[in-house]
Amino acid sequence: MKIHSLTHYYKGRSSPVLNQLCIEFDPNKLNVIVGLNGAGKTTLLDIISGVIPSAQFHSSFAEEDVVYQVQGVPLPSTMKGKDIVRLILKCDTPFSFSKSLKTFIESLMPREKELLNRLWDVRIGDMSVGERRWLMIKSICQLERKLYIFDEPTAGIDPDTRNYVLNGINRLVKKGKLVIMSTHILHELEFIDCKIHFLHKGKILYEGDYVSFLKKHNTENPDIAFQMFIQEQGGELNEETMFV
Ligand SMILES: Nc1ncnc2c1ncn2[C@@H]1O[C@H](COP(=O)(O)OP(=O)(O)OP(=O)(O)O)[C@@H](O)[C@H]1O
Image (tube, rainbow, N blue to C red):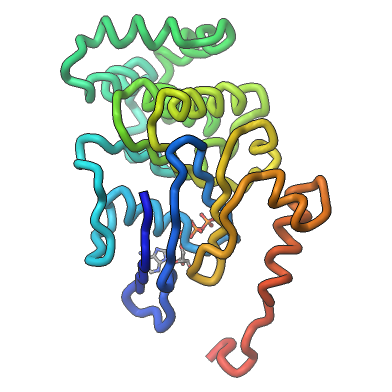
């Protein structure tokens, strides 16, 4: 999937958040969008998923072939773990819930099974941020879709659980699905076959693999490479337009 030129303005903002942005997703790799806070990653994912309509982007995927994990959990806090699992797995209507649940449980590692068991009767409002995210994402990974979009799926998740989440997402790529995610945790990409899309100043200014990104900046630390990349692009503010 390619986007040739995408511009998006938010109401009341004089400059566009996305400015003639071009991007090419790789169907055989995990596509990872990175960039500073406020760079426009969520906006881009919102447009690709159809949450924000855009006259400049026409998805080649039908609505029912797409699943989008958003950052917040727009669900009542009294829902329990088992309700979330049922709600998400039931989205795949051709399969019965008991069959989907059996497949879901079989896909989990032993510690994940313990976690599911523990969260089964816990209300969302009583789960930690990481527990809630793990449950939502692992359930979403069970759905049969062609395009999967995850907005910061590993934010606030401990390293062990993060591995389970990333493995689940990576398995989708291996199954031939198009997967796009955003992240601020660059170190997690080291062992993943991914294509990084660096969003900065409304455009994708770098597309390539993790190793090339590090090599380009002559470092083994992705956070340093990130900082160097931002500096290369010139980070100065225009003093004339500040605080007016
Ligand atoms: N509904 C909105 N109306 C006006 N401006 C918005 C709206 N949503 C987002 N913005 C602005 O657009 C810019 C990009 O926001 P966006 O959430 O896409 O960034 P992001 O890269 O996902 O940030 P983060 O890494 O912090 O999650 C920000 O400056 C934000 O303030």
